[in-house]
Figure: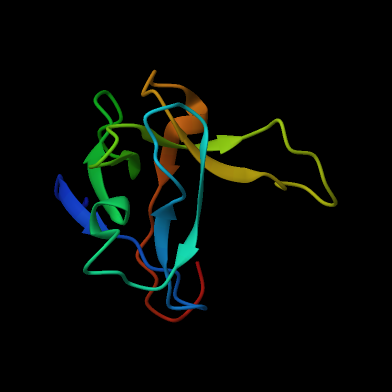
Amino acid sequence: MNRITTGAYLIRNTYHYKLLHVVGDSEHDFHKVNLHGRDENVHRDRQIWWVEPEPGEEGTDVYSITNIRTGKALQRDNSVRGRGVGVGLIIEDRDIGSEKQMWEIRRVMDGKA
């Protein structure tokens, strides 16, 4: 697979056709990230993400994803427990290079990952 080029992206869920969106004013850490309709006027910067390959991960499809408004990394929040494996919130936090802040991105050609 060709690696994704470093740059600014909108990240859209293919099922709901909504974008990753930082909730609230994110001067502080641990703000939730949810799905939201595209907002070109008021919250555009909450929906644009800087995606770049992780150094030292050559040959893999591992990336860091950072919100351009806040400069904080997309991260899985393990503090939320629920039903099933992999339950948790997606939040943003200071970029510390944690495994919770690394994302594998795969091109989907047939609707299956």
